[in-house]
Length: 117
Image (cartoon, rainbow, N blue to C red; front, top):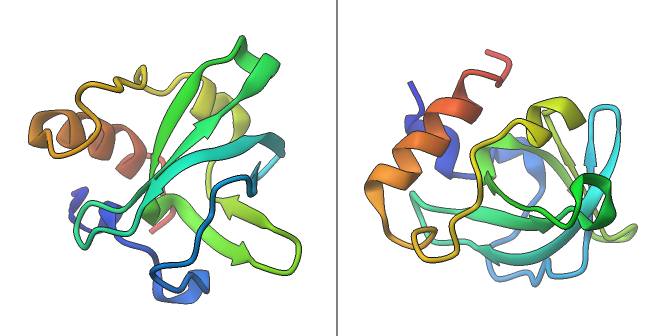
C-alpha cells in the first residue's frame, strides 16, 4: 500500500541532490512551514518540515511521495495533503527517522492512506 510513498513522483520536478533546506512547504490549503532536513535516498526519501508556531513548533516527516511539485524558482514545495492531515500525522521521532523500517511503515501507512490514487 505504501511502497511508492518513499520516492518522489516523476511529475514532482525534483532533481536528486538539490538542496531543499529552507524551502516553504505548501499544503493544499495553505503554508505549513519550511524544510528543516531532507533525504533523497532511494526508497527512503523524505522531508522534515518545521511547522513553526502553526502547530507549536512541531516537526513532521513527510515521505517524498506526498510531494506534488517542487518549484525551485519560488523555493516552494507543494504537497498533496491538507494542513489538518499534517497536523494529525504521527509525531516526528528524530531518533528513528533514518533507517527505522517500522517507523517508516507507520508513516507510510498514515500518509499512503491520504494520497490520491
